[in-house]
Every structure is written in structure tokens, then in C-alpha cells.
View 1 (tube, rainbow, N blue to C red):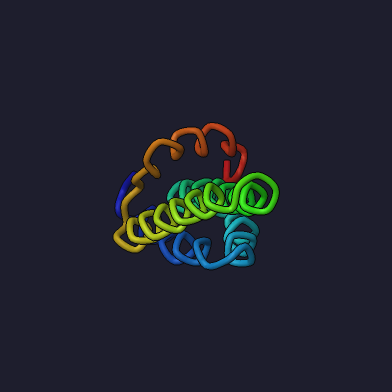
View 2: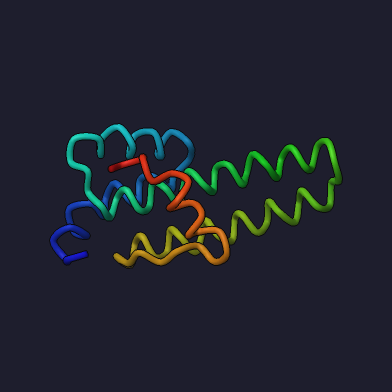
Length: 109
């Protein structure tokens, strides 16, 4: 990915990490442009949103501590991903980032 692509998609990539609404805004604004940098980060954020929903379900119905641990890991991954979006890099979230790219490959392509 070249620097021009990153520069053009950086703002939306950062916006996508600010709440569910930010992810929706980035998805819809990237539909026309199809910037690969933005698309990469949108896929990561959609995966993080699903992880957060999963942690809430686990916390409520299975085990409070387990859900809290999963939620804490999700927040750590969110900080990691946001940091690299701001830095202008496409770093996968450890362990699950590659799966997010596979599962949500239709977002932004």
C-alpha cells in the first residue's frame, strides 16, 4: 500500500474506531472511494465490535469474570488498532486480526 493511499484513507480509518456510529460512517463514506487502508481498518473495527458484544453476552449469561476479561482484552485490542491507524500502518490485531480480514472481506471491496 503506497503512502498516497494511506494519506487519503487515514481520516476515515481513525473515525471508524470511534464507536459503532464511527464505523458506520467510515463504511458508508468508503463505499465510493474503496480505499484499501480505510477498508482494512473498518474490517478490524467490525471484528472488535463483535468481540465487545460477545464479551457482554458472556458477562451477562455465562460468567461475569470471563466476560470482563474478554472485554478488557477487546479494549486493549481497540487501543492497539487505533494507535496503528493513527500511525498510518496496517497492523493486524494479534490472534484475531487475520480472521477479521477474512470474515469481513466484503466490507470496502
